[in-house]
Amino acid sequence: MPHPSLRSVLLGCAVVAAVGAPALAKDAGVAKPGAAAVSMPHPAFGPPPPNYKGGTAIINFVARVDDTTMSDLASAAQNAVIGGAEAIRINISSQGGSTFSSQFAVNVLKNLPVPVETVAMSEIASAAVALFCAGEKRSMADGTALYLHQQRGYDEIQDKTAAAVLRSHRISTGWYRDLMHDCIDADADRLLVDYSSRDVVIDKAQATALGMVTTPMADLTMAKIWGPVRNVVAPDKPISFMHPRRSGR
Image (tube, rainbow, N blue to C red; front, side):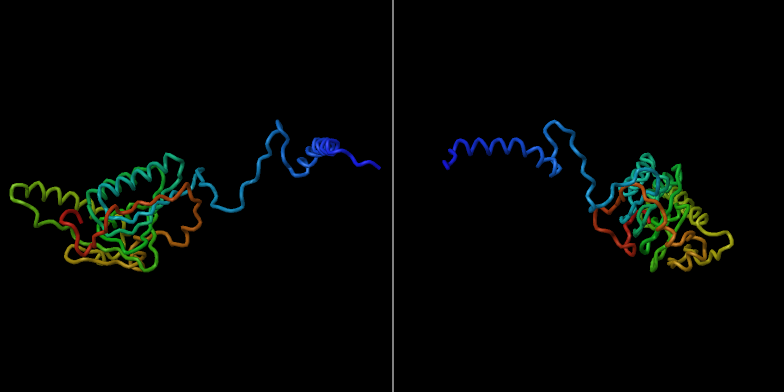
C-alpha cells in the first residue's frame, strides 16, 4: 500500500483544524469572532465597593485643632452629606488646640441637615472636647477621658490691645462654657466639671453619669456605613496639651 504524500498529510490536517476548531472553542467557552462577549462574575476576593446609598459617614480625626484640620473636617462632613450620607460619625483623638478653629467646625456640624455622632477614642483635651460635645449622640471608648482647663494666653495681652483681647477672650470662653453646659444633664453634679480654678479630667463613668455620654459603644456597630472612611490627620508632630502653644487652648 503506497504511503500518502507529505502534501496530502498537510492538506488533511488543515481540513481537520478548520472543522474541529469551532467545536473546541464551544467546549472551552471561547467566544467565536463576532459573537457577544460573556461577562465574567466578580472575583470572590477583595473589599466590596463603597456604599453611597445612605448610611453613616465615618471621619477619623487624629490631629490638633487648628484652622487646617477643622476646615478639612468640616469639608469632609459636608461632602459626605452632599454625597448622600444620612449621618456623620467623628472618631476623635486630639490634644486640643484653638478654640476659634473648633468654633468654626462645631458651627458647621451643628448646621448640617443630618445628625452628628462623636466618639472619644482616646483622652481628648481642651478645644477637642468642644468638638466632642458637638455630637447629638456621644460615646466614649474604654480607657478614654475628657481633659478640661481654662483658656491660656493672659501673658500675651499688651496694654494697647488689652480691652479688645479681653473681650474676645470673654466671648470665646462664654461660647465654650455654654457648650459644656448644654453637654451636661440639667440635674447633674456640675462641680465635677468646674474647671474655673483647676484642670479637670473626666473619665468614661463620670461622663456617662453627667450625661456627656449618650450612646453605648456597642450601638455603633449596628450602623450602615456610607462611602469610604475619611482620615483627618495632623500635618505636623502633635504638641502635648501639658505644654500648649501660646494661643488658643
